Image (cartoon, rainbow, N blue to C red; front, side, top):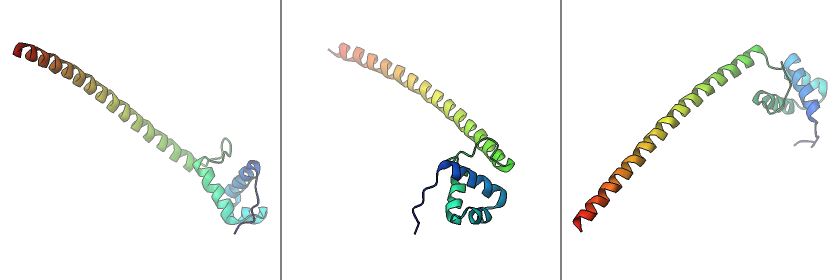
Length: 112
């Protein structure tokens, strides 16, 4: 059960930076906060929910982010291509529908 202590964002950022340098356990002991609390902040920092500022990512994290960005760009490009295909298909179907509707009207008039 927590003590209900509130920590401001500046403290969290500094704690995360210290934990990256010294390790979570040591940083938590030095700061006098629960290791689990600091671990949670570390997770949030990795997700980008806590802004630790520029240059706070290690090279491995930066590489992972770059790879994720590249994959997301590929997905966006594929989705844009699919949207274009579907728009073209929709346009064709609208034209076909109009053609058959006109043809049906001609046939109905002939029958009368």
